Image 1 (cartoon, helix red, strand yellow):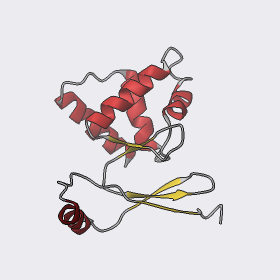
Image 2 (cartoon, rainbow, N blue to C red):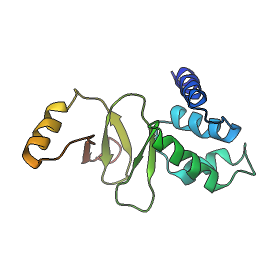
Image 3 (cartoon, rainbow, N blue to C red):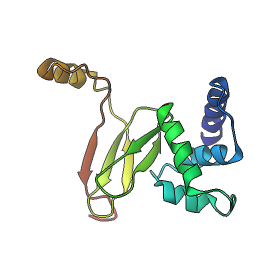
Length: 140
């Protein structure tokens, strides 16, 4: 799974005339291979052995690029650090209120909810995000 996603993502970047640096490749590969919703600092710490001259700013810049082009979703949950999630298929998140673990889950399309929200609010709905909160298996 991971290799194909990395290869496809790299091809898409090349098609958009975005240069593929070793650091950019490594950040993207890390996000795809480690579906743990890491922070930028966690990514940096994991890659600093392989790239000792890479800065935290390089990680943030690549995450910003990936977010802008839609590869990555930035998840803000009110704590100090954003978490990042590679988005290859639409999915939602279950978040543990005790340990902050985030688990992906898929569910049927929620376009009916978007339509209802649009009708009730007058908004032109562009996107949605669903999160459920509770205790993970380890914390319950």
